[in-house]
Image (cartoon, rainbow, N blue to C red; front, side, top):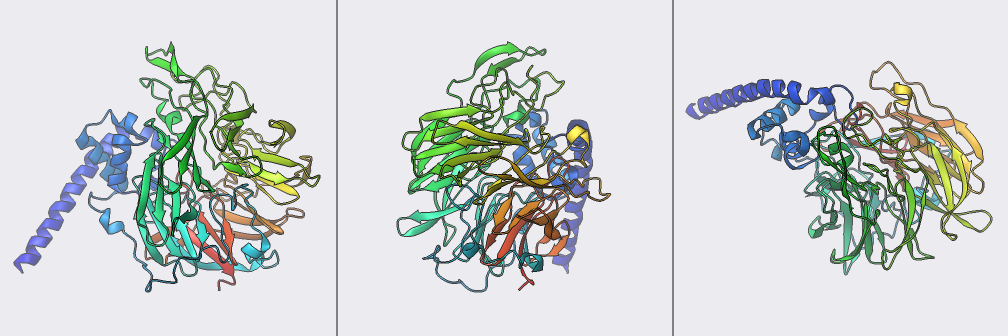
Length: 601
């Protein structure tokens, strides 16, 4: 009885302490945080999304993560109080968030992972086509309308399901917003193993050999690359690739012939908005690592020149340039020419380097830039724009490339690199003639959250580009639609209009997520939570499912879908896998991986 009484007292004391911290944290939040997190400021997750985090994660963001610059205004105690307030949880709950749902048996040996159907990495293969052939898809166009939910898996402690799954050897490999990386059974969703990275893992995962082992390769939001034993989840090696404190890995590292080609982006576009921040010094990176050891073979900066002091802002803070040209997407491999292709983002400060908003071709052996082709000049932008002290005079238009290039074979026997930009334009360049422009076609109006965001897909005839245009003309309801363009000419084959969404204030018809194509059907997700299949012949909708709902997850985690943004669906062996939930930009948060199969079987 005394033990029970003592336990009750402890619970009451803990509850009282948490309430006191929450009250203080609420006041601090309103003073220092609400002006961004409650007013739809880009890249500032709203309170509903932060409720899905743990206080440990919020504290890490405030002290040495994306919010470290803003966190300087808080004491250590205030930071802890804010962390508990916005999550509604006490510190120490992290351990309790470990998911249930472990597989009852060890499963088959992971020794011949590519013997069956698979989707490896971001774009299926090194050409990043995002096209799954019929034999691998195991799903015909006439079966797509019969797709129904087979199972759901909930990511604990996550407000964004932003890491595209890889399916190899009967296992699903997926990172998460909490930093956990999972290997799941592809048939049931049970957990084979879990690995805890040092930061959130957004990149897709690539599976490849390391001696007699098979490794899972990925990057985290501290710009660290990892190799983990794909059979057991044991760490093989870990290497930091980006030295700038704002460096992150967003795009999937590309694995080819024993080398890992790692792209590095950053969030300095966010920290650069602070009037006392010396904006900006980050330069995008592509690094080649030995896949077996993680040893660096070469590192190439997308801007050759290091940043140097330029002007001062109105606060007297020193400004720097050149900066930016982040590599947000997965590199594309040209096995014929031994070349690595990447697309780059905008500049963060004036003047914008000529390699911003560009296609770059790098020699696979040395990392030397062979050629570059800029598609938008003088594009310098950060979150101080349009009116705050650190906004460059260029003031955007913020037309990054977030899409990997599709390396395609044209019907006439030639080749092309095809990628969509946030400008709303799809470009095709000639990789065999120094990136000469073949054609360009506008499919959207473009903007900071506009145009083509995360990826187009190509089959042997067309490229399919979905349009975001979120917040076009400051209206969150606008945006969306998808077009098919002829690979040979850029001529529009068909366009499907956006589907108006409901009364939910977070609803939008924008379609920023990467698209995926199988023979006869192209798949595209929307911020309203709907995943739709369109006929590749004429664009009519053949399948539509609303993922923004609650689910009974196989691992017992409270799971809910939301906006579809970032990664696209993958189709393997008759099952379609897709993540749902993206708690950024005021969009609907969520934390679920969904598996759909014919009649749910």
